[in-house]
Image (cartoon, rainbow, N blue to C red; front, side, top):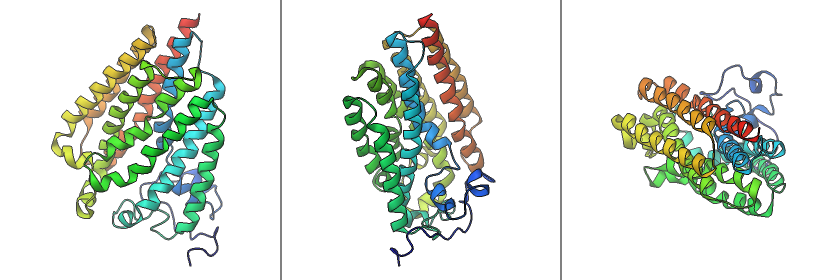
Length: 318
């Protein structure tokens, strides 16, 4: 029965597309592994993609405020919050999508459809992670707290969007780019045009990288009726990515301009263009393994932009 043995699990092995020989599977006690897989701890790219807009925004706030670097305490909080809330989001998504996941080759080995974790166990784990996220959020100023609470709306609606629109990646962008607002708000207790441009640019970037990711599942998605921009763009994915990544780059330029950034920030953005262009040039939408690797490479893109913004803050404060 769903409510019995709340913390017992049936660990039948890692998820199909998980990182092989990860510490989750080699070092964690067997009973904890399914929960780690629910939170996607073996796939850190997810929380990095959630974290980067926070870090970018915090770095641009340092530039605008004439500081040499972002507030270190805020950076620690953003890191903990990103890991906790990404895990909570994945757990929530798996609870909503269990019927779909059981029909898709890549996802049917996830903990809930595979029977490693019951729905009740997953709900308890979701609450624990959400409480950690709340504890982190309460460390910020009042404006940022309310802004963080508002982020729950796009998080809540995202899992349902693949059922009703060809643009679920847009709603993922609403949720995953929210940190672009949070970093600035944490520093100033308000928002301005710079974080708004950063947020909209982050949405364009998210649609792009998650379109690449969604090409892994397009055949199964078509069979079960799941919609995505990968299916929508299809053979026109590369032109769509050119448009999306160009818009993201232009908006990041505007964010830097309105933060009164110097040359280092713009050099970082231009260096990022090279990386995004490489993704588009080499992309093979019919090679699922390559799509996954290119998706993960967006973690590198995050570093590129952050180093540019961070260097600009450091140089500007000298």
